[in-house]
Each structure stands twice: as structure tokens, then as C-alpha cells.
Image 1 (tube, rainbow, N blue to C red):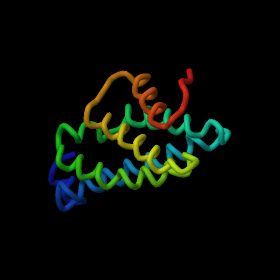
Image 2 (cartoon, one colour; image 1 turned 180 degrees about the horizontal axis):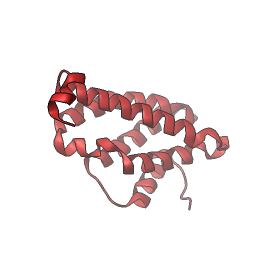
Image 3 (cartoon, rainbow, N blue to C red; image 1 turned 60 degrees about the vertical axis):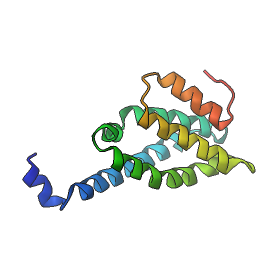
Image 4 (cartoon, rainbow, N blue to C red; image 1 turned 30 degrees about the horizontal axis):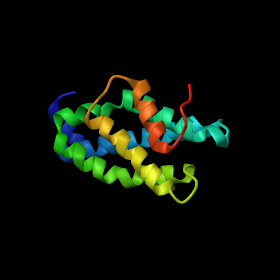
Length: 135
């Protein structure tokens, strides 16, 4: 698609990036719902963590960090509380908000500093969530 055609729909690069971010957030929300839809309550948190690893591995905005780092950081600042609030219900107890926040921060750090080891990423998320090692 040519740049003039693209900017017929989006008046600026910022509008385009915001629309792309909203699209990715909708994909994340739908994927998260699907990931836990048929999972028992006892296994939902682990299913969520697995989904986060898979989603980020295929996440289109991963490359935005390289192309538009300032936008990526701004986006992460606004997404952190949204992601945390969506995860809190899966973290029972008084420390749920803190655990959900740490999981989101670990996930966002993997967007900034990519690692090609999804198993390590999952282990990090499980440790942040307070889950014991699972295969």
C-alpha cells in the first residue's frame, strides 16, 4: 500500500500507530478469552501465562520498539494498568495486584529486550506469578 493511500485513512503516523495498537489490544483480549474458555479454574492462570508467551512471540508490534521506540514506551505505559487490571482476577489473595503487575512488567520487558527462548519467558512469568515449575 502506498503512503498516500495509507494517509487517506489515517491523518498522521501517530493516528496510524494508535489504530494499530487498538487492533493489537483487541486481538490480545480475544485471544486471552479463548485461551481460558475451556480451561478449569485451577489451570487458568497457567493458560494465561502460556497465552502471553505465544501472543508476544507473534506480536506485530514487537518491531515497533525498533522503529518507533518513543511510541512503544508511551504505549507500554498506557497498557500496563489495562493488562494488570485484566489479570488481577486470576491472582487470588491480598498480593494479587502486585503479582499481576510483576507479570505484566516481565512481559513488557520481553517486548523491549527480546529473547528467543519462549520456555525461559514462560518460566519467568510463572516465577513472577508464584506458580511452581510445571512442564
